[in-house]
Image (cartoon, rainbow, N blue to C red; front, side, top):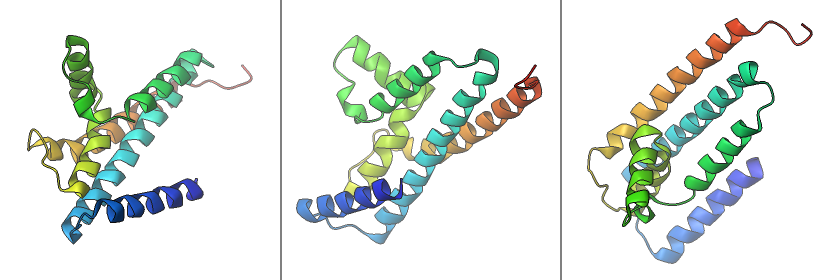
Length: 151
């Protein structure tokens, strides 16, 4: 995974240089904060999903759900507009399961683009903390339900 992280940093640097964007220290700090929050959010989601396997056993649906989460996370929020289904997806994946927020906000901050609505930047750290707290509760609740692999 370290090679993927290094490749991502090289691609990020190349993209910034090619786009001729001047990046300030504040933008870099907010970008790193946003990426850190995104990592915490996705880690928490993964832990919560994995914890449910205590009740469901080996459930292919969990893998499918994780796959679709990563698919939706590849694209910016703005592509989910213009149709009722797109608007429903955008609202759902922005406010209910805020995948699009933790993915879109750091990139927009680094590029110096405005965030709409402006207060959405506040949602990113709150989402990460809430996801972490919920995932820990799901994990410990699942752990109390665990009996053993041999029984």
